[in-house]
Image: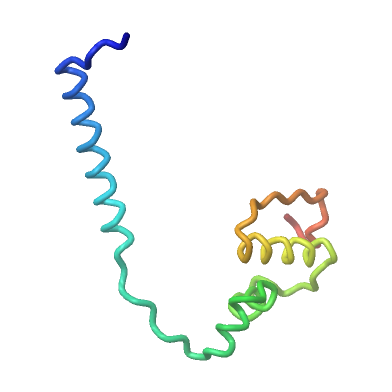
Amino acid sequence: MRARPTSSQHAYQAAKDRARARSAAITLAGQDIAPMPSPKDPRRRARADRDFKFFCEAYFPHLFTLAWSQDHLRVVAKIERVVQYRQTPAVAMPRGSCGWEC
């Protein structure tokens, strides 16, 4: 047989509920941002939405200056599957396979 909750247990639970509600309100306020502006180039944006390699090269050309290795292309394909099908990401690569000073 379970003991009935005491008034201090009710008070503790009420305090936890208030803290949870306050935390949720703070999180929601931080996530409340203005609507996204329309893209300058909708076709480029649409392609970048479905092609991660293109996204990297089009939006960050100053970072992606070297050729893609086969390992990189496999990781890109994995990232696309993770995003499209909500898979769990798990990627392991041998040291030195990145093609530059990691």
